Image (cartoon, one colour):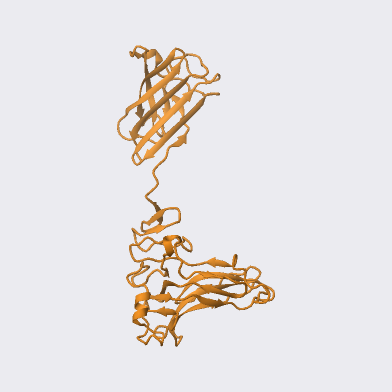
Length: 368
């Protein structure tokens, strides 16, 4: 009885290698992930005992020294030409893989594939599914050969120069490079496998990157769900409507903001240093916003630490004073709660006082 089988070949007896009822039960059936109108994504059917690995099936390995490895049982879909369709394949037993001796001077990389021959679709004059070793070309820096038509790559195996059964053979701990990729039925999430450099088949398709999910939007893979925005830094600009532009000197300007859709939350702080300079009269100070607001000016919040204590009040968020808009019209209150005109904007103190600070914050609708 053949250990490598494919359904939907010629209607032959089980002994002849064609389709039987056993083949139909073992081979994967159903609509697989499409890659075209008539084509399906080829790959190994995922799954493992106890769910520990993405896929146990068709794993290439070696468990003893020499030139003979093994391939584990498993199931796969092999896409031939679009007109020929996709062939479901199953390997029911562990099979030996006998590699040719190494070249005398250079290593090579062989490719292990599962391949379908169909005399009705190709010129092979064969009708069977097989596991093959496609031998690579020896070179100082060898490359794996291309995958033949009607085949699915499973592993690359590096054969050292001069390797043979009597001379160390293949180092199975390092020689095998897994080339398997997974395929699932349409609508299923494609597990992580060989490479992520492939396009989606339709908008709304999902894949697992190993770190999270991605969704194909018709042009590119995008993280799903899309990452939530995070707070980030910005450096506000300090300006004044009246008089020369203030100079922070050894003071500091810093800000943070969160841009979530059309809403922006921000906070900005001006800290006065010993060399900070500004005009002595009311400068109508402002601090620029991180993102330009839209619509009419709205209120924000204001708090300051000045010579006589802490003061709170309001400001307004306006789109006209800076390219990104600005928080301006700072108005503080007396300790009694009354509006204190002398404590607004740049009216106090008239000379720099190291350590004093002004903080503004609020939320507004962004124009982008």
